[in-house]
Amino acid sequence: MKSPAPGKNTSRAEIQDITLRGVWLLANDREYFLPHDRYPWFKDAKVREIHNVQLLHGMHLHWPDLDVDLELESLDRPEKYPLTYR
Image (cartoon, rainbow, N blue to C red; front, top):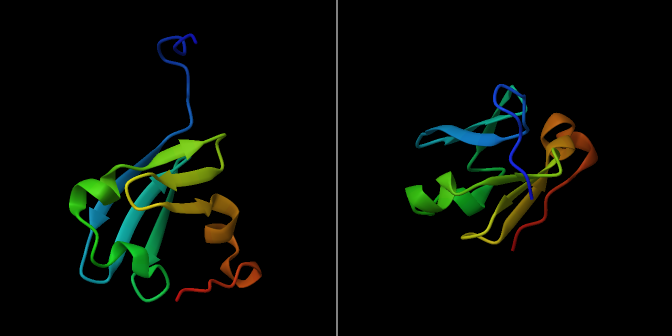
């Protein structure tokens, strides 16, 4: 597998901030807020677990330490993707 050429844009995800209300995420140059009441998996997670996020195929977010997967489209259009959490 080759690394991208220097200066070439690549897809990535990065946690910008963690607050008492939720998580700020930057993915593909867009900022998202994931409130704890809608995304409860992050509420009691360790900081390092939240920061360990991967963007796969430019559209799939994966937190391996938390076993959480989200599609970016579900963040762009949450009304189309009702969440079920038990």
